[in-house]
Length: 333
Length: 128
Picture 1 (cartoon, chains in turn green, yellow):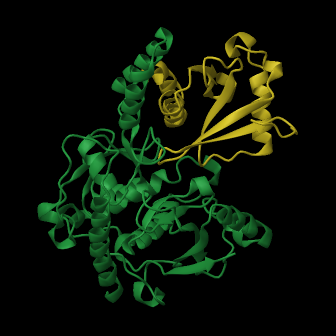
Picture 2: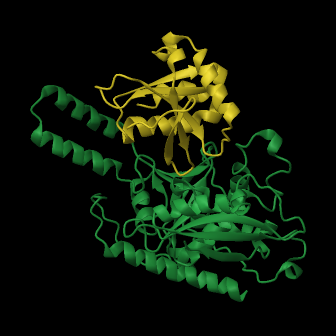
Picture 3: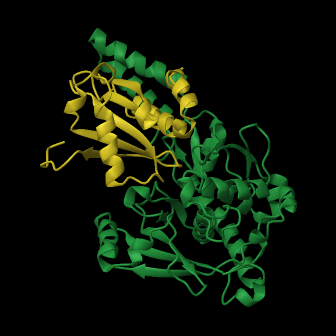
């Protein structure tokens, strides 16, 4: 319990920190007319009363949660850099980029054919709306950890935290070929969503901005303040560690191969060095079972949900049991 | 609305729908390619895209949208090339026997699309 309280206090600090850093920098790119006035909304004990709830839609096919409303997109990006614009490299700037293209073009165009092309671009911009795409880890953190996101399913029904916990665990394995599936994803203790989420929650609680690391061949990259300030400092790969006797369990979702040979390790390490990042191996220790929580613990950190009303419904044992201990291991070349 | 062009293909291959739409949107809007055509390749049970970056480019690039958790083995890639070669040339707008390389467009849950050019066999390094 002591550790849990520390984590929540850290979340408090994290939200203060990320909100402050967003407002310090004047955001020139998102030029929407109603600049969202910053108010200290995200203190954990006030979440229920004063939190502005954002609406998200879960799309099982792409395994993501979509946020479409413009103000919400701006809010999520500016207060913690959550999500990615689906028509941009990172920050959702599609509209701004097209406006800029239109402005630059109109002052220098003399050729009629070029003018037509520019008009076509502007028409495209009007008909296509960019949305913010959240990974299931980000969405779950916003919903379960901070209580500021409401997630709806494909039929427009509100999903409880429990529903999300089940849906995200199921969709994290759904695209793998059927013969690889042995147990139902809901009974797996090493379900990929659980392992990835624990790492995401952990680093976010410490104040890091956590984004996807697939462009660098790793699971996550960590930014100290956010992508707009500095390049990411760390590449994180998630490695499951099984407490049971057989530690060589093959989990196709994680880069276990990195730990089997120095050559593979140095491949990954080399990529990280080229992009000036340090590699962090993040072990997630998986208990053999959840039936006896106290005896399983060596040094466990308990992840507590935020106190919002729909969380009363989740009976899921996984969420309330002591889960795992995350070990940090840094490699510097 | 742009997505109307691919909506029928999304219904036909629902598992590939999100990959196809993500890559299609990325090429047509974010990357502003001059021309992007969707082709249904039944032996592969998916659609591919044929595209050109700008109006002046002569060669069409073959884009194969896929998911980030798909496993591509040597066998699967060989099969991909051999099945593309069985497609009638009218469909592909080029000589199918002449296909030297394709580009894998890997779509991730956060909407990132990563492009990898795959050659059939060994190729000397080029400027592209």
